[in-house]
Length: 208
Image 1: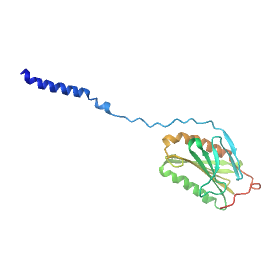
Image 2 (image 1 turned 90 degrees about the vertical axis):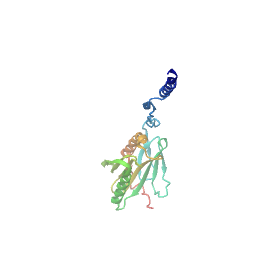
Image 3 (image 1 turned 120 degrees about the horizontal axis):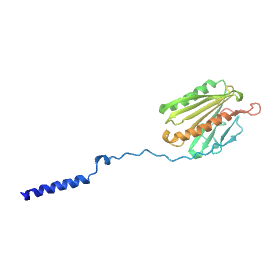
Image 4 (image 1 turned 90 degrees about the horizontal axis):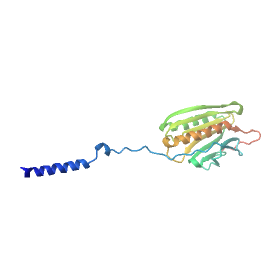
């Protein structure tokens, strides 16, 4: 009788050892950690005047570089405000109004709303500076849009200027949102310091 019990005791002991070595199923669950993004140390907002032969001037951050637009569709007085530290660029285009202000306004509205396909919303903030004859809109485009910030300013008679912010990386607001908010302050400062030059002293760019 004792001899027959030995195999059973051996098997019972073996199963007990195997089960004791098997971790709790709950302990086997691997919970992924949230994706971390590099911490960004933002510089202080300091500005310098950008002026040229073009009929406008404004202040840009000291950590930005202004370069002429070299794209295939460039026109006179088109520039890029580049932010090397953030891999971003503000594309600035200028147009002379010739009984076509409504078309420029419609184009800007379409350009902004084109990015709302992948966005979560669109806020339009009016720009009104009567003393400087600077009027326009600042578009805040929320979500993973290619351009989260756009604006235009005009004197409603002669000048029209549009700006749009882009990054050199795929849109991801989880990582870009702090940078967008930071550069938005610079865009607002640009608009607040924006001036049109005296038309009698400054020739307008020739149409292409």
